[in-house]
Length: 247
Image 1 (cartoon, rainbow, N blue to C red):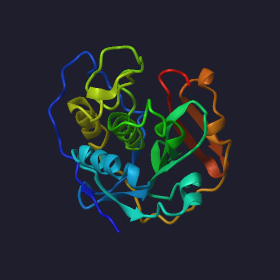
Image 2 (image 1 turned 60 degrees about the vertical axis):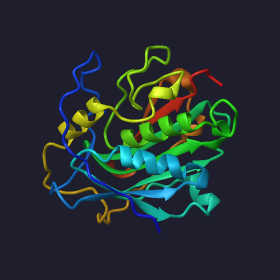
Image 3 (image 1 turned 90 degrees about the vertical axis):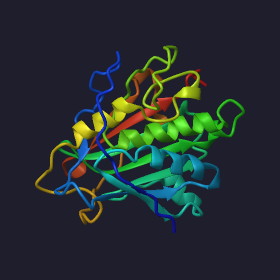
Image 4 (image 1 turned 30 degrees about the vertical axis):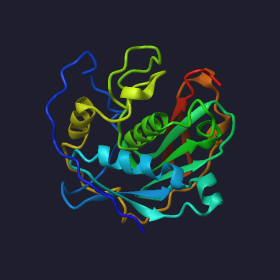
C-alpha cells in the first residue's frame, strides 16, 4: 500500500501575462484546519501510470492542503473502468475508455461551491498510440487533471499558443508543460487561504446519490465543461481534456 504525502506551501505571485485568476469556479475542498488535513488520491492506475501519478503528486506538494496517494487497487479492471468517486477523496484511474476524443477528464461533485469527491480518468485508448504514449503527454494530462480536482482551471486554452510552462496550459507540444508553475501554486494558496465551518475531506460519511450520462458520450462541439444536476441537490462538474488534433 503506497502513501505519498504532499504538503502545499505559499509561493510568491507569478507576474506574467497569465497572472489572472484561474480558480475553477471558486470550487474547493472545505476544511476546518490548516494542518493535518490529508486528501487521498485513490491509486487506481496500472504500472505504466505510476511514475506520472507519483510525479504529479510531488509537483502539487506546494500549498497548505496535504495529499496522500493510496491505497492501490488497479488490479480490478472494472474498478478502473467505472472509476467511481469516493466521498471525501479523489480516485485516479486509467482504462481504454474508447475513441471518444478525450485524453483525460476530471470530475468533481459539489455541495454549493465545496468539492465533496472527485475522479480522474486517463484514456489508454490514446495513450497506447505512438502519438501520446510518451512520458511528456502522460505527465501533462495527469498533472492537469489532478490540478482540476483541487480547484484549478486552465491558464490558457489555445493549443497553438506559446507554452506557459505549466501543466494547466493546453498545448500541442507538452515538452515544457509537464509540471505546475509558480502562478498555479499562488492560485492554490489563494483558494485555500480561508477555513470553513465543516470539512468535505475524507472522514465524511454521507453518500452522494445519482448517476448521469457517461462523459464518453460528450461532444467536443459542446465545449470542455459539463454540468449535471444530480438527485439530492448534488452537482457534478466535469472538465474534458480533448485531443489536440481532434482524433
